[in-house]
Length: 60
Ligand SMILES: [Zn+2]
Image (tube, rainbow, N blue to C red; front, side, top):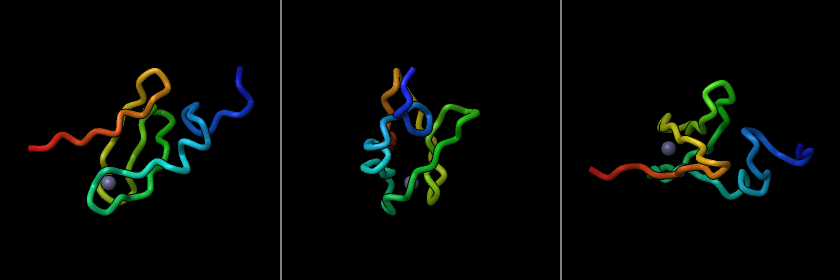
């Protein structure tokens, strides 16, 4: 068990560099019950895959 994990079990250093890929590069917050990351600007949701956030927005 790690005592150094941040929200959603991600490395706190990762949280510092994470930003939404949307145009606003919105701040991201953890949705712990859903185990997802949510952009505070565009409300996009990103899954966590094996401890790695999947920061992809599908282009049309
Ligand atoms: Zn966004």
